[in-house]
Image (tube, rainbow, N blue to C red; front, top):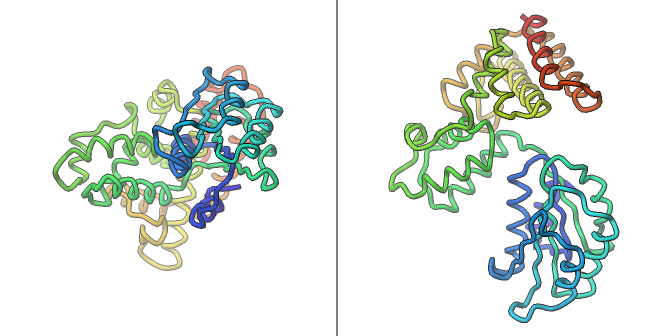
Length: 326
């Protein structure tokens, strides 16, 4: 099941005996896991078992026994490796045997958790939700919701700026919202600049602009990879950026002056938007297809082929990109 489907079930107050959250968006995985746990009881009633602490026998016994101090037995298990089928199935069964228990699996990282998805079904009153990296418009809605929970006074452009500063990382953005909430003032882009610091020495937004504009990106590309940016993630971010440029280009050709709200669903900082529009309009529509095909093939290669040095391969491929599409 995907996020939108699960959101509908949440609005209907649908409850399950067991939950599994996994996918590409670590912040959303943890966010939903904790919120679901809190829907069953207070934070004091939630027992968290993290990574190496996981012990199947302990967890099963915990779920089979009713809590002496709370109405619900809530177990939140965070792992970075898939759990054997027999163990997952027995833990789900334990929650169905003891209706006072609920188990929530919070699956983090790049391990192959997809195989675990089949262990969850309506027959066992269990559900698995897979999360993908949210589009910028969706992420900014989440950030606004968190800002409102913190009773934060803000300018929307400031939230946009903070999100882009952190390379579209929801976790880092929302952590900074908590820091900004202690300030007794309306949060503006200037406030963000004064009190927050971006992740890493290279702006991903600037890098993407320079790459598609076929400028020299060697230094910034090396710095991004040295800072630990995942190669596949980088290619998907480039593809997403190119798709945005295509939407701007198509809108300008059919409707006139590009409207950020209508195209992206949010308003980026003015300088970023102006630069994107100029770049988008300068690219011929047919070139977009060639660029996206190149990026899709590159992503497929990174995911399916074995390289002695994937880092070197992505550097060579993106340098080739600036030559091909100049």
